[in-house]
Length: 363
Ligand SMILES: Nc1nc2c(ncn2[C@@H]2O[C@H](COP(=O)(O)OP(=O)(O)OP(=O)(O)O)[C@@H](O)[C@H]2O)c(=O)[nH]1
Ligand SMILES: [Mg+2]
Image 1 (cartoon, rainbow, N blue to C red):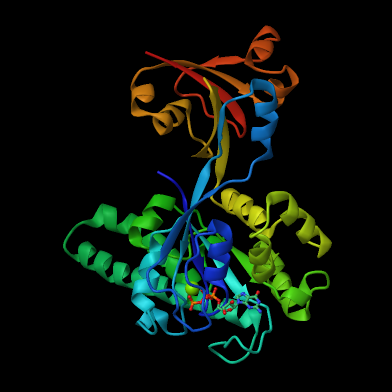
Image 2 (cartoon, helix red, strand yellow; image 1 turned 120 degrees about the horizontal axis):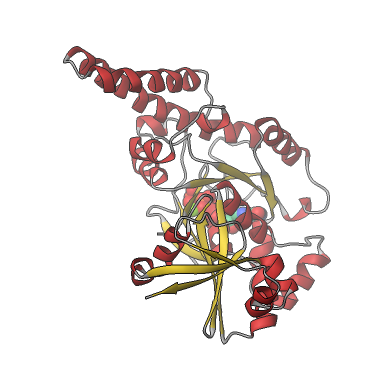
């Protein structure tokens, strides 16, 4: 279990720098293309101010935030879908992720080479998306052939239903569009099992230069405008600056960043945004001496939640006390909330809401 976001982009856009920043794992971030070959995986805490608010009431010995997994994937170049650069390997790594974080270079820096010699964020973004679209088109067209063959050999019912979906996908991809950017109803797990890339939710990180933090450059603004047209979030992060700041203590870091005009760490914003595009919600378990935050897909039930915590808890599930965070805080804990009648007693089919506080009773 655990949700994966993959960092994707042209070579030398600052993907490993961003990954380092997120995980502070110290993977190589050097000025040469294809510096990252094997994907580096990191686990990051999801920043969550609610944990402190709950902790003020229950004073736990331990607070455990929920986590996301991040992959730092190798750079991709034009023609990747035909195997250029590290094409196939690279696309394979993206197939395994749940969401994509595109890193687009907006910083100038003459000492860092650009594979196409010119910094053009919108065009760079489109190069990458085109590769993903072409890779998907290949899959879809191969599938179409196979299904048509299936029709000939008599697997008619299954094949007819599938061909409609496939042809709709093909039409979208032939227009150069990502599947997720259209209104098409996509079955997430089916798309994943087919290895479809453009059905994955994505967001964009604009890696901006040190001089562009307060006043954005026109290059960044073009990318932002592009994002607005696509309905995609573009998050400006000065990775170099934030990486330097990450050496400091939490308080110094905040002070330093705010002195250069950064009020909230780009990484915090990014992690929260990943959480949103993945359609995730959080629930809290204030049990014993440990306060813990958990991640679950929207629509997840108490049964799913119990399974996440422990299979024994899932198997022995009796019922759960559920209270919204708001009620929990305003009644200063679960007992107060119970007295006020704000605690629900629910069975395994109950669908969790974002920020529910949950106590599961089990055999
Ligand atoms: N000036 C400046 N340099 C940066 C910034 N971000 C990254 N760099 C530099 O750009 C070079 C490439 O950064 P990486 O993070 O290795 O890039 P990458 O996208 O992981 O590259 P590949 O793995 O080779 O595809 C390094 O020398 C970084 O220090 C930035 O915001 N400003
Ligand atoms: Mg790298």
